Image 1: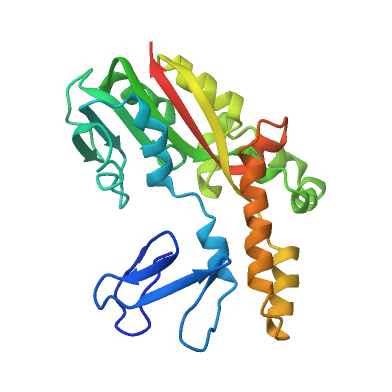
Image 2: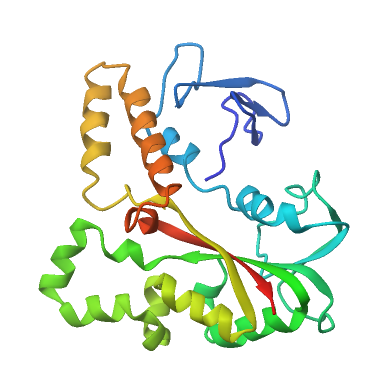
Length: 270
């Protein structure tokens, strides 16, 4: 989601405590997770959720930063997401964002694949290409949906009504072409096997984004109702709830740490 200025419709740039319009400079503060739209302090409960969405560019950059030293970075399958600004303060020497791969083998010190794997007819070929581009001892930072999205309570209905489809979702790597229609999420163990088969060893594997945005959305609906009845604290309560889920996903608690709907894996080329 792109936030725009209510005054001039320019793009809003995120800062630590506020957003600022790139065109007119108008400032929109964020207080307790609540995005202040105008001088009347009108709020939108959807914004705290967006503030807690995984910042893919920053997260990939942070994962790779300790391993970069005037490095050549290739973002394979970049689409509309450019990482060049995310690496402005790190050790990147050269950055290339490509959708096709007219680059020689072993040319990259680090390779990024962000939200690409789940859109491809042949994900294994993509993994091989990542391995081909990355030099020995180089690094791969990859993100893709996680199968945990299928395990939230509301999916119990799916399991009861169509157990075969539920099984296919949890094992989408076996039914990949069918799964492409529902934006497949891999089981973490399967993703780790794929990166190992491509010649990488795993350094770190994490999940982000608690799947609060289910069809039922009980927490959101309850707090939204409070907001509509004039309880201005609802936005702050929702922000704290999302902050708690962020902290839970960053722990090493068994099961809980795998509850995020996006998984990020950092690997090194053997």
